[in-house]
Image (cartoon, rainbow, N blue to C red; front, top):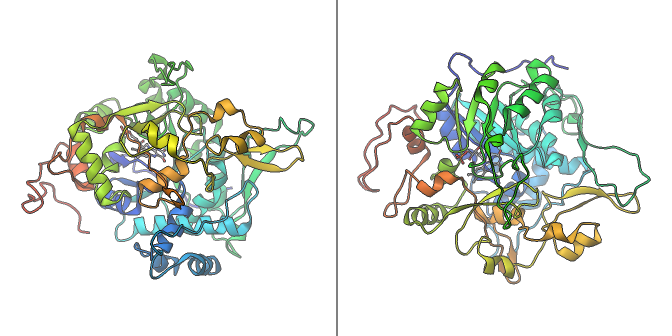
Length: 502
Ligand SMILES: Cc1cc2nc3c(=O)[nH]c(=O)nc-3n(C[C@H](O)[C@H](O)[C@H](O)COP(=O)(O)O)c2cc1C
């Protein structure tokens, strides 16, 4: 299934730095674009991107999504998206956002087309004005979003797809199919305990011909699975045809976002995962696989980059430092506040075993006024109206449904969920949208945020309490050991490195 042409990572001199994908909307197109302009790899996040786009349209379209939607080949869905959600005057003060219909496990073609169109806008904006490499990041756990997102990204000419939080075996096989314009599907792991007599298997299907009458043959993007160990990389390498994986990102548990569960399954009484030497990847074994690999999780420093190169890695993937740049998806006031508080030591990083409905450990910034604060957590009324993390189950009538342990506990148990599973979960869907300035309004106030970031943020090398600001160029200069602190907004010194023109 591959009459589409493939991209290749320049083996002799692949970029040294991947700016990691950060959902929801943190690794914005602005960040990815700037990083790609600098000759490194910029990655946008596909997670929750449809919600981001419909909220931006309701805010009056500050990033010009409508301009790029005008070029989207599925013109009917582009018009539908704009007609339904665009508010030229922005949202009325205090008004709640209108929501997309939840993307189900057997979604309508319309829902898939909207998701593909939204992803297209993010990738298209990131690729404009340069020839650098732009990637799309997705989470394997969120299976039902993967195929339409990748298809929209392919239509925008994405160079790379990276998938973490799970084992993206099937995804690797489906990417070339999508590039060839062929239907694709992913197996769903459905809890059938309420309908024990069923022996059905379940798949999520997506057909490019639901988007376009005559789907074109598109370039196959590079595929970089994000793995936590050489063991996983070896499994993928053995089971997949050689041309399905182009390299690896190997991530340690000090990285921001979700982390792999500890291999020994050990958790402390407060649910903090306990990692040991079994969670350390064997870099020699990775190198032996013969593909470029990048080290992620605590490598965001000049010495991390030097170390990576010294062990034969192509470079490093960095998220935490980029997450607080001017170009990230956080509103300016948020990055300033977080940078200042981190420098003052008011915020620490903790690894929470229970907070994420995915069941994966999640790094949390212990900032006040967020769900990391017990009082804020306890005060929030549970609502599940976005549903990205819902898991599929078959109800007693044999219907394929979804439930999430962060939804109201009564609802969760009525759907067959174990109440013990619901304990301590936070609604990441609403919180992560709140982080990027798109908090849903409720009768009792806006949804509270919950920030994530890796251990690296506890010793932030950029910005300061007095001048809590830095940008993507600063991060790249810093990683190359060429960063010179600026001297305050008015007197910022020139950058020491020549940079490509905007
Ligand atoms: C705010 C934030 C959100 C993240 N979200 C994702 C995500 O959606 N998908 C993913 O694969 N990795 C995610 N990550 C991990 C980064 O892509 C990257 O691999 C990691 O941050 C690298 O380690 P570092 O945190 O030490 O820089 C996230 C990291 C941060 C800081």
